[in-house]
Image 1 (tube, rainbow, N blue to C red):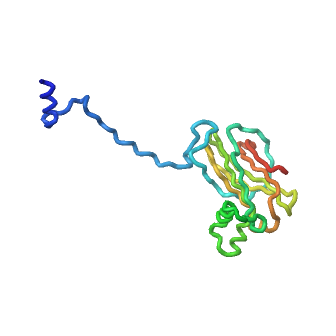
Image 2: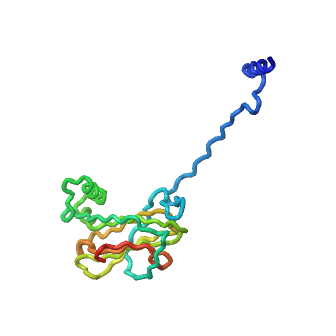
Image 3: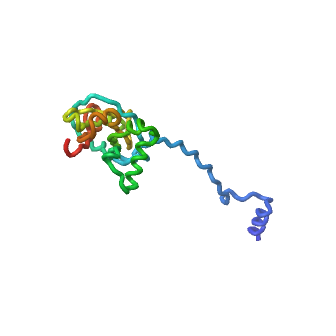
Length: 202
């Protein structure tokens, strides 16, 4: 009888419910703004949340450095595309047709389109270890310049995670010296080549 009386009074609101019957919901914490630059691998060698495209390739003198592989640094993928419809015909391939549109995006006049023609290298690489200053480097030879080696590089400050860098051999450089027929892509850290991929004929 006593319990029924108490329950009836609670329904009418004449007495408060006991503390053990109340359920409180804490407000959800505000999520921090996500920044691809701050994304870090969950464990050494794991990929970050998203690839980051950083820096612009700039001409540099070719240079040779000691090689010392670092298991935490990997070149995960090298994609190269020859953006020249006279040499790479899309035919009926929708994929190739898209590649031409992608690399020629924003070019309107014939001169602008010619300036985009040439060889592109899109490189995805990972540093799963401690953050460090690194350089992504492309050494390459072209058909008309034969054994002469040219170099492009992209610097990365305190890099940790997964990154994507794009090199282009285009414009007058491509028009004068032609296709890239051999290449070597390296990640340099602390003055040493710690990861590398190269073409078959390098």
